[in-house]
Structures are given as structure tokens and as C-alpha cells.
Length: 256
Ligand code: ADP
Ligand code: MG
Image (cartoon, rainbow, N blue to C red; front, side, top):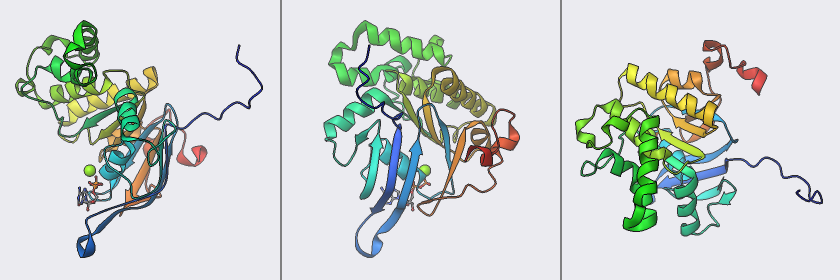
């Protein structure tokens, strides 16, 4: 039994971002992309990040995922302070606890679907990714309904099938946080709906925390919370009728 001498820790946040700034370029060509962004994401949340093109959504997502550096402010993911952590510590966190899904799928056409899914394990374990990785890769493909096509190459698949393979790859290793950048942006509406339904299930059944950049109302209507960006800052989400579309979610005011 755990000792009671220490105060119980507050439930740690998955993401804690404070006053994050980021700019690209130097001199007159310099663009301030993030102007002091603060965002918390709690375990098990499903957050939709919306806003016009160029508002800084991808930049914020990439910084939270440890794929890009912040200039100033604080970003902690699973308690790891990115500006104090080594690149190795960040890479380990990324590998073990975070999954990524991108609009462009980013699958390698020289590999089968299965090999795309287990590629992260191959990086970790070298050539000896082995049977355990193969089994887990197949299981992930089964979960997204793609096990039958495991030995195909991505070039032989439809957009929706490619995105399901990309989701299987993101889920490989059991990430607790999934970061998705316009995951339905290249899909027709029916396929997009299926992918969103899968995300909803993943969140509700498996408790995976989701942060999804999207233009789509459908996503924001199933998300637990909608965060809007404009010109590099988080703004009051206008017209977040997400709650009004569904029966489950309470009105935004009731959750504030
Ligand atoms: P969003 O995802 O909301 O469309 P982005 O985060 O991609 O927005 O981009 C925000 C702004 O930052 C845009 O003006 C874009 O041109 C600029 N930007 C993004 N990445 C880079 C980069 N690597 N170098 C220079 N400018 C960039
Ligand atoms: Mg973007």
C-alpha cells in the first residue's frame, strides 16, 4: 500500500502550454506565428483545434509533439518540460507516448502497409523488430479494418485506406496522446466520417487523449472541447454549437 505521508499529486495534465511564442525567419522577413499561446489538455480529453489557414495550428501541434522548437514560454507534455529536457528525452517521449496523424498520410510507398506500421519499432529495435512487432502491427491494422490489406503497398490503396494505415501506425506502441493535423482533409465526407467515428471510439473506449486540428464541423461536434486560433493566438471559440448538435455534451457555459 502506498505511503500516505505525501499529499496526493493533482492529476497531471497531458499538455500544459504557457505563453508560447514562435517565429520563423529573421529580419524584415520574420513572421511571428505564435503570440503567447496557453493551452491545457487533461487526460482523456478530446480537443478540436480550429481556425483559419495560417493561424498557427500546425505550428502549435508540432511544438506540442516535440517536432519543432518554441522560442519562449513553457511546454510540458506528460510533465516533461521541453525547454529543459534533452533531445533524447523528448525523442523517447515522442516514441513511447505520442502518436501523429497527418493530412498527407506520410506513408512510404516502398514498404507494405504492415512495414509502414511497424517502422517506428524498427527504428527502436533495429532490424530485429521481430515477431512481436509484426503481431502488434497486424493487430493495429485489424483495429482499423485493414488487416486483409497488410501486405499491400500504400499506392494500391484509396485515400481512406491510407489514412487508416497511418492511424494504425500512430497507434502502434499504444500512445496515450494522439496529435492529428487535419486527418480528414484529404478524404471524402463518408470516409472522413468513418475516421472521425474511429477517433471518437478510441477516445471513449480506450481513453486516448486527442488533440485534432480540423476545419470540419463534424470533428468539432464530437470533440469534448473546441479551441479556436486566430493570428497566432487562442481566441474565444465563436459559434461553438458543438454542444447544440449532440445530446451528450453539455452547453459550453455549463462546462466553463
Ligand atoms: P495553420 O496550420 O493554422 O494553417 P501554420 O502553423 O502552418 O498554420 O502556419 C502559420 C504561419 O506560419 C503561416 O503564415 C506560415 O506561412 C508560417 N510558417 C509555418 N511554418 C513555417 C516555416 N517552417 N517557415 C516559415 N514560415 C512558416
Ligand atoms: Mg496547418
